[in-house]
Length: 360
Image (cartoon, rainbow, N blue to C red; front, side, top):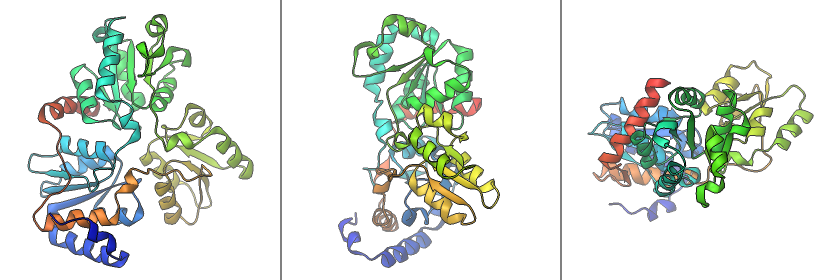
């Protein structure tokens, strides 16, 4: 294996040149996936761009791509591995690229919560577990094993609607904000939602409140989207009368309710791109995506909703040095940082993913 350290001595120009050369050598045998939140010096080399599930599905359809290099975070690469063909290998350029939200709900604590809820009610009969796609593979497998399902930011309300048609309650993890706004948009009052604290017995919720709740939300959140606050919306509306505010549903309930639109990264981009020249927007999502939109559409005023820098610091760990190192190792015949989900976990996780795809 080629060591990584010397790559940090290369100039930006040398890195770009060597990445281009490695891509040319590998050809269609390698596909590079770039998530919308990826830094520009890596994103520009992506063969496919999009959100995590879209990228995984597209990569799996490229039969000639033996190597899938996912410039995202760990759970995204896991989904790519689950959906990929047996001859395809998924690689994460930097194994330290994780997701703090995904880490907030781990399998042991979710299993404990399920057991504690099971002592109060027949969970298999009354409750559907739903995990946001921003979670580890073993949680997707947990949902697959318990008649549950995966959701994305674009289909969460539709998945919840399906779940309520199956059973009366939902356990939603790891992002409480997506679960709350999605359930509220379906008409579930806030009074019928509770937040489960995994560090406390029964989530810190009384048995009576748990029995009455329709939605049990895991106490998890995105460290980027939690930075957007109602005061930021108020300030932009005061400074720019007529401005349109669009945010990701991982933002808090109040921000989502104050915004003109709330939706996935795909919806955010589509809405801004299709608006007429001269449109003024405040966008509440990760900084790299917002900056990309500003560069792409200089005929519009596109503002970053938060006054401080909000970027996915873990995805930022994948830099041009790691990408170059990854590709040149492939050229030399070595696949580094391979993501391989155990078969028994992958099978159950795929049950939950396929159930989502059939519903949404």
